[in-house]
Image (cartoon, rainbow, N blue to C red; front, side, top):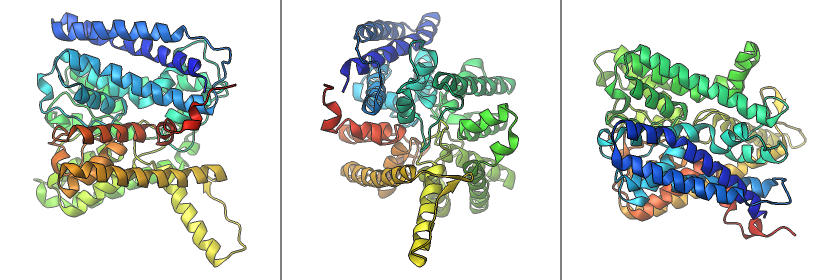
Length: 482
């Protein structure tokens, strides 16, 4: 393990985090939020100083190998979360540091799970930083670093990109990896700005529009209102619902659209399945909840929004789906587990993995019936490499084991079955709200310190797709290079 090169990348990420806190500091100073201003100022100075110290670490070997790539991503996310929590704690917005870390990890991992009972009493600078963690975590800290730092070369960095990007397949849109990162961020920023403008056109104040767009882009779901998006009118709810689904689409599809390769974009199997699940689930829930709303239009709006918020793993809410019939709640839990598309800002296990798993199961059955037959798995008409299939099987095996162990750990808090199960599902899949005590009107404040630590780990494991975090526990990965 090349510790120096790991430290160098972590240092660069810390300086980026310090720079991104400057707008929050400016907001605090302009609004006279003294405690918040000092909190951000101290954190910026400390993060920048440590960052400069780490950057000074020079290594003779500049190549980023697989193990360095995975360690860089995992350590960076952990360090940025620990540092990003400091303003919450120093400003007394969240006095308990563990709770501050929970909120920050939830933000960076775009989970949206909160321990706060009343977000509307928080200073605006804190609300902005809280929403911005969703935005920065959505596309990824390392991805941003790859896009803006001039001395980072393509060699080896694909491993970091793969470790951080959600989904089973990561590749370059263009030959140069750096250009790929820039294109993805250009699309990301353009969609964020477009949503902000549309919300402003609907009469939403600028600060609200910006915070909603930042949280929505990262599919994080941190709201600045206690009633979440239910506070706003139908126009806002529809705009937010549409953009939640857009940010759940593989960004490669947007790139193909920009190139005017519309047929190729529509032929994406994962995209078509994603749209089908949304339409089918919305129709079923609308029918099942028809008696809960004044008319079918109202029911359709709420059903569409909640399907969009859960499958995209955003976590916004317009109604308390905790009160829905059991069929609708069970369907929502299934959507939690599936998630949206690979290569999006959404969480969950991803539709691409589910497709590979289903096709692998089908091939296994056919192989049992016809032992001599040769079956291959195709996605979008192209062969899926055997290694990719094995990785998907390994992913789901690890996922089930982590899910089971986490449920047992959280069960010591003696919450109801629905709360215990969905607290793990909502954090491991980076969704936020679940059922029972953690429904859209609840939060995670009542969990013990031990359970919060378990759920923090679940959020990190879920966002980084399991393996980068688990690798930190492997002794062999820390062996020094000879």
